[in-house]
Length: 261
Length: 158
Image (cartoon, rainbow over all chains, first blue to last red; front, top):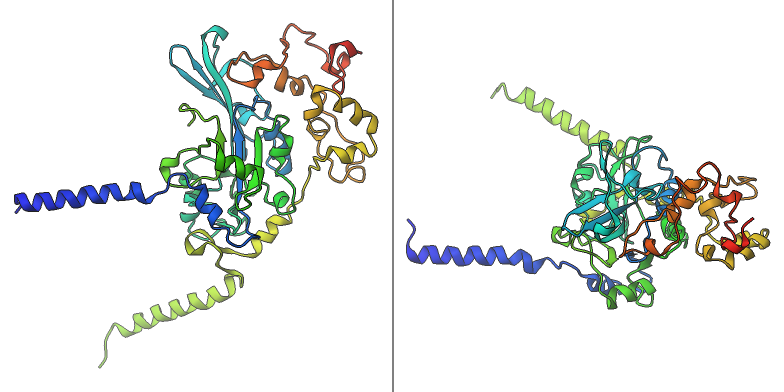
């Protein structure tokens, strides 16, 4: 039977329980990762995207597909660039034709299924480009759901996929809140950006970072306090995509906008 | 005491034992819990090396290109196109000139239009790049017929 006393007790417990996860999940915590680098040789790869610098040329996508042997004409890509156009009447338009593999060479917004939307220059309030790639989350939801241990996080934070071990169940493709995973058309296994693991482990930078003429993309080691990328993340106003999911993504953005999804 | 349970139970135990035996042979020796624990790095360790061995294609060090192509390197470095790495237009060239001995240059109009299609976006750097309308501006010829991509200034047109 519910008495007044019982009701109050339960209500207090309930409210305390509900408020706990919000306090427990650090939404943006690069400091914690930096602190984890007590051993000086530690590496934690992170990415910094400066959306102010991106002009939507798509050379990053082209270089990524070539470097990582992603079939060029298949409609899958490890990185892509999104275009956002916000008109003065408050409407939001976004597209990424072929993942911007060929850049944006028309002012028409690709609505899909062969439909396009022409927006007059005078109607535009703001418009910008946002490069996207795997966030190499510190709590990767795609890894948790893998039933066979085919996808995993390395010590340096990069999430890799074991092509021999993947059974192609697709849980990880569903589990990623950022939609970065897809099926590789040749190997028929899950695939996604791995920060060009073969390049960064040799001391090279990723193909997309190198291909970008405008310096919109940068890769760095968050455990190195002198790394220029670490300095920006620690001292400037950066944000991450969908922090409310608790995935602790490690691709930081400068110039984020509320419209970016 | 005899019971109808024992025989099927034995079969179940044998099957479980077979499963465990098969597991010993099927699961690779290096399969286990990695650096981030069971939840995030339950994997086959040697796969990390397999990914490290994935072939690199792009060099992206324009200085290496200048060793042989110093004239082209010098001309583009003095232009606004200096920010564009050689391989963005000339293609991946890590082992050039051994393989490929000759690079395939992308001279398509589409390549130039990636930046030079005019998009009037006030809050993006794109609007600050000079653009042309590809439909009205000499639509049938490659840009490089008139413009030198290494010296894009209009005064140095071919």
